[in-house]
Image (cartoon, rainbow, N blue to C red; front, side, top):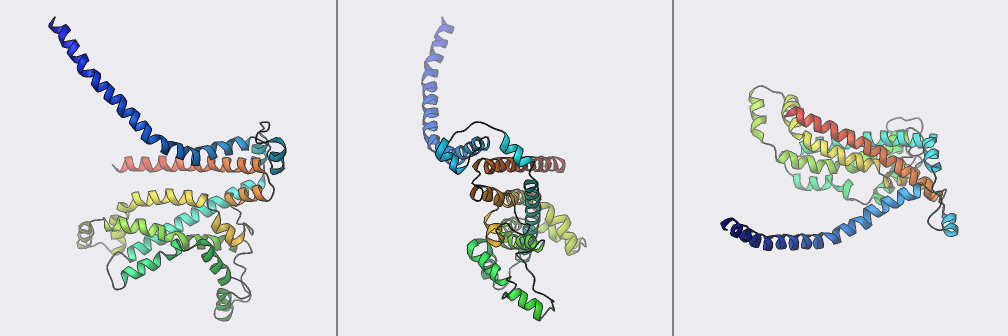
Amino acid sequence: MGRVREGRLRTARGAPTSKLRTRENRDGITLVAPVVLVVAAIIVVPIVWTVVLSFQDARYVDVARNGLFNEVTLDNYADVLTSPAFWQALVTTVQYSVATTVGSITVGLVAALAFRDRFRFRAPLRAVMLLPYVAPVVATTFVWQVALNPQYGVVNAFGTQVLGWEHPVNFLSAAPTALLTVIVYDIWRYFPFAFLFLGAALTGLSKEIEEAAVVDGATPLQKFWFVVLPQLLPTVALLVLFRMVMAFNEFDDVYLLTGGAAGTQVASVRVFEQLTGSSDIGGASATAAVMAVFLGVALAIYLRLTARQREESR
C-alpha cells in the first residue's frame, strides 16, 4: 500500500511539471517562429529557388510564355562544367580571393601593431584608418578610376613626369595590371576590417610574457614571431574565414572598377553577365550553384585543418 501511495504522489507531482514543460516549449516555439520564418523567407527560399531554376532552361522570354516552371534538365550544369570561360572565372576568383585575403590581413596586422602603443594623435589617426572601409564603394571606385586614368590621372602623370615612365599605364583596361589593380584596391578597402579585429585582439594580450621574452634577450622580430603571433592565430583564422567568403562573393568592387573586363571576370560578375547580358536565368543559377559548392568544399577543408591544428596545439 505504501508503494502504491508513493507512486500516486509522484504521478500527482509530475503532472503539473509535464504541463509546465509543455507550456514552456509551446511558448518557446511561438517566440522563435517569427525569426525562423524571416530567415526562411530571406535566406532559405532564395537558395532553394536558385537550385530549382538551375535545373531549368529558363530565360526571361520563357518565363512570360511558359511560366515559372519548365522541364527539368541537366544541360545548364553540363554547359557550366564544359565552359572554358567558367573555369577561367573560377581561377580568377581563387587568385583574387587568396591575394586579397592575405594582403588585407597582412596590412591590417601591420597597422594594428603600429597603433598598439599610445602616441600623439593616435585616436584621430585610427579614425582615418577606417575611412576606406566605411566610405561608399561607388565614391572610392570613382576616385581610383580618375586617379589611374591613362590620359589625365595623377598616378600616370607622376609616373611619366617624375619616375620616367615611357608610356602611361592602362591600370584598369589591360591584363594583367587590371587584376593586380583590383586586388590592390580590395586590400586597401578591407584592411581596416582586419585592423579592427586584430587591434582588439592585441589589447587583450598580456604584455608580461613579451616583457619576459625581452628580458631573455629576444629581438623585436623574435618577440612577434614566437610570442605575439601564436596568440593572434585564432583571430587570424577567423579573419581568413570571413575574408575568403567576402572576397569569393565580391561583385561591386570588380564591376565598378573594370566591369569584369581585362581578365577580371570573377564568378559573381560572370553570373551577373549571364543573367543580364544573355537573359540566361537557368545558366546563371547553375553557375552560382556550382560556385557555392566549390566555396563550401574549400571552407570545409579549411575548418577541418584549423580544427586539427587546434587539437594538436593542445
